[in-house]
Structures are given as structure tokens and as C-alpha cells.
Length: 392
Image 1: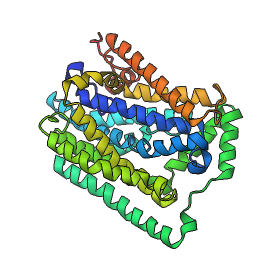
Image 2: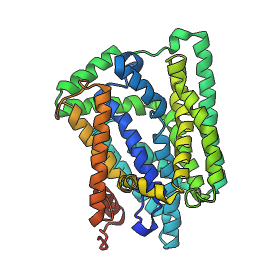
Image 3: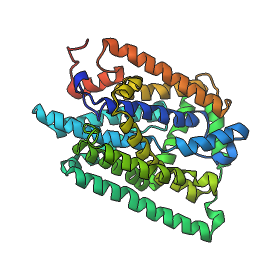
């Protein structure tokens, strides 16, 4: 996550990349906070949240849910290309370094998923990154084109299929709650010991990453990494000033389409069909709008200074992501404060923003003395088997 898994000197960094990553971390944390505090895998959220929380949840679904992890996935692919270019320039074998970096990330992800929080993304990023490596020899246009086809064609076909099922068998696609799983989750996270919670974590992780979901995960993440890699080969961020028209077109097209698709469960019907379209097609298209808008804003040097705090978060994104999980689980699980299912959604969102602001402040202070975040430093060590002697 540190610019695509590679050590980058301060004067080599692309500030817009760090800022985009930092802002994405906030969006992802807001969504993860809901998972930290409630059994969202098993309930119908439109029935679970009541009154003001219900209204807030709908706003979150439209503007935040599923619209920030695609940015992160694209940045991951973007960073791998930068790693490839810089290692090649220095005469370092890219494939060997890339594989090693991703394997180290995989180990970190396993520890995170099974011993801290089940909603881990690092395992998928590491595994899918390994699959992506051979494709990085392709041209930028090929990566963009095939990535877009692999993402949009299956998503649109499945959306059409599930919409037909919705029309023919409406009761079969209504949202539902798994009462037994909800009860087990709440009991475990509220009163279980660490190992009982670990067993529940395994069940929750399998619920998302089991065999029945593999195809959706692959087609939902690898194509976005390919799109990011293609954009990197075409220097879309490095040459943002020259490509302002391209970014403006992307924003103008994707913003209204993304908002429309993401609003379907709120405006029409909160069933499985519209929710799938909202989170898959709508979420990703809106992420294009957010990315293009931010990049357009960041072509202004004054605005870069305004967004600078997010860059510090982006530089140590792996550390911040992991510490968010540690803090979140300690707030809600029984071996911490035990507040699982006890806070309002609004309180949880406010808490997430406060935690993130504190993380940004700590990151700014940290980089006064150090070049890498603490977990990034360990990641670099286990990849290169030595610590840098050039710390500030």
C-alpha cells in the first residue's frame, strides 16, 4: 500500500497519489466502523438502523459505501507500475522484488484477518497482485481496455440477470436477516473471550471470502488494479495538468451515473438486485468521479497544500489501516471496551473521524523524523532484509 509496495524516497513521491490514498483511508474507515460495531454481514441494514441512524445509513450508502475501496485497488495497480519502472531503472529484478513484497503483504494480511479483524483486504490484494504481475508487461491501453471489460461486462450481465429474477420472483431477491448468525455474532463479540472471538472472525472472513464469492472478488478487484496499472503506464497522474480535459470528461460522465445507480435502493427498492447494482457498478463509477474530481483539484498547487495532511496518511497507509482495525476492535469487542452494538451510527461515524484526525496528526509528526511508517519499515526490512541507514 506504500505506493504499490515499494520503498520510495521523499523526493520521488507523487503527492497526488499519497493524497488520494489518504482520503480513501478515511472513506474505508467510515465503512469499516460499521463492521466493527455490528454484524453487518448478517442483517438487512435498512431494517437494522432506526430513526436518525436509518437516514444517516442511506447517506453513507449513497456517498461512501463501495466508492473508496475501488480507488485503493486502482492505486495499488498504479503503484506496482511505478515500482516496476523504478526497480528497472536501478537494475533491480522487478519480478523477484514484487513477488517478495506481495508475499510479505500476504503474511501481514493473514495475521490481520485471523487475529485482529475479519474484514481484511490485504490477503486479497496480495494474492490478486501476484496474479497481476505477469500482466504488467502489457501496454497501458491494453491494461485499461481489458480491465474495463473484465469489470463492467460481468457486472452488467449479472445485474441484468438479477434484475430479471427480481421481476419474476420478487420475494427471492428481497433483503433478509440471518437471525441465528446475528445472535451468535452479538453474543460472541459482546461477551466472548479472545479465542471465541477469533473463531467468529474465521466464520466472518469465510462468509466474505468463501468459494462461492471468489469469482466476484476476482472480477471486482483485479480489473480495477489493471485499470490503475494502465493509467500509471500512461502517466495519468504525473501528467494531470496535460490531461485535465480527460479527467474532466471522466468526472462529468461518471458523477451523475454513479449517484443515480447508488441511489437505487434508497429511491426505488432496497432489494438484493438494486443493492448489488449500487455497490458494484454504482460504487465503482462514483469512485471514478471522486478520483477525477480530486485530481482536477490537485492540479492547483494551493489546493495541494490544503490536502497535504492526507498525504501524510497516504505515506503510511498500511500502518494507519492496521491501527484502525486494532483501535476499532478494542473499542467494540469484549476484550476491549465492549461497546459492540451499543453506539448509534452517528456516534460511530464521529468517532471514526476523530480517530482519523488523530492518526493524521501523528503521521505528520512521525515524518518529521522518519521516512517510513513503522509497519512500512518492517515491510521494507523483510523484503530487503536490511534497514535503511538514511533515516532522518
